[in-house]
Length: 201
Image (cartoon, rainbow, N blue to C red):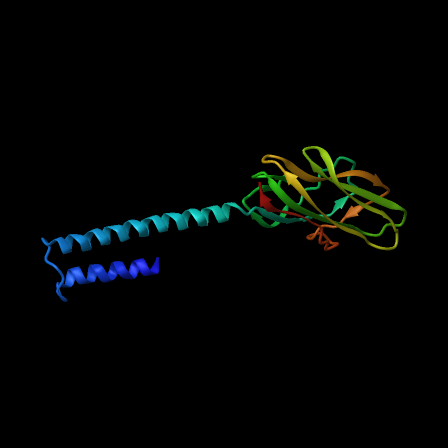
């Protein structure tokens, strides 16, 4: 494109200066110059349109989000959908922070990740999470056992999603008392939920 632009400037400069033996306005040579300039203008317009299309396509090909748990969740019941209301990244706007649901904007292969942590308790406790895809179980995350130590699990999965498929994290089992640590709560947790498009179909 730069070469075309330089040629165009050179041609127009010569025609406007009237120097260097450039043909008169009525000569066939002058018309040839004008035809070449018009052709260069058209090529530049086509290239600009192609670049704009490529830029738009590139931007629309990436979708991803990174969300985190803002507040502590204390003794959540079975069936609780975990809503990660804090959002650091939401390219494409496919993650809904008010519901905790990611809706696939295009069909393709996606990477999804999740981490959860619960604080120590005085008696045995445990909590199980599951990644739900359209209401079906896709990935389980278990936090069971210790009373003296923090429990933390990090899990990720690669799944195929069709356009419009929905995924979210849900609690499917609890034992005893459990407090899931949020970032803005007094426990300063780092529990997150994330996802991104790897390759569109």
